[in-house]
Length: 164
Length: 297
Image (tube, rainbow over all chains, first blue to last red; front, side, top):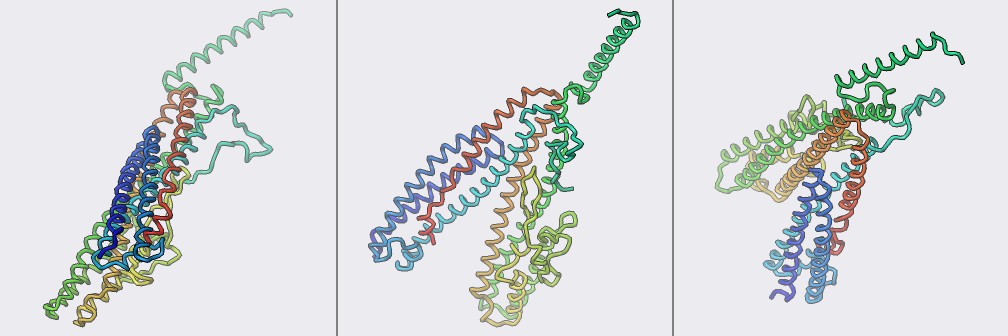
């Protein structure tokens, strides 16, 4: 006989996978905005992202609540992990639970990968902002040659770091 | 003060020469399309123009860096596709080889196919682009795997290569250790060699075992990771390429117009973009909730 709280837990895991799916779509849009350098679009996506982020927190809070109830029902510690729960279930129920977890884990893996990719992209954008800003900053003084401090003769020059 | 004829002549001559110089300058602007020809025309704008000229040359170098890395990433792409197909076939052969109804000769035939796949894998591990071994890490001049399937790459060379993209160090390579090892020091080449030897020896205990399959799983996972890594790198390069193309266009336009007003507009846009990027960096930072991570253990 399967524990009463097992089906609700699987439903919660499914909800979480769905909401992470929404988040993944937003990350795809975010990536596209970064690829196109569309900062207005990026701002709009960030607002949506914050909303989905709240939904994720709520869905996780419900999942945590149901997990705790299930653990109490099964006589396990309240913060038992999914593998500890599955180990105590009958084989079929354990497999069902792990299938739900595997789907969620796959989504989380995708989100993590894309998230890291986006962080790197933003890092690059910010770096390039500095590059442009350095050129765009209004210049009020003219760099002149100072024979006493030749190293300060060209204050704006930087050594070339490229290859080849 | 007494004005002499000589002074009048000098002033007139200076005025004439001045007009002549202005006319010559206008002529130069007309023929070159530039307002600033010499630093004395407008020192500040000329300094900026010179700065932009050198930045343009840097950008062109970064674009060349991107092109070089792109060829390597394309090579990874085609290599990984072949590796994926070969891995699929190896798994099929491993399962097929364990079939009790096979004769020793059938198993030898399967073993021979595994040997051929192994040779092909060695070739893939030694793939070159413009004379550089793409899995060779910091020693790209040497083949990372010997023809008999031994990884000979110096572990010290097992590191990320970076290319400079406007001060951003972009790591792009994948080493032989990252993909072709299946457990500790054991490589996919050792695994395939053992599988082939077991089939040739006709020993049923070793045809198919969980450990070998687990190692194949790990190899497949590494291939998947390589696909993801490569895809992400290609996205990144596409973005960098787009940015540089925009920068180049903007700078070239600036050089042709020499208007500071353009820069004020750019500066304002940059500040707004910076705010959007900082916000984008912050969101999602805490999306992996600790309770969920603990639960998924």
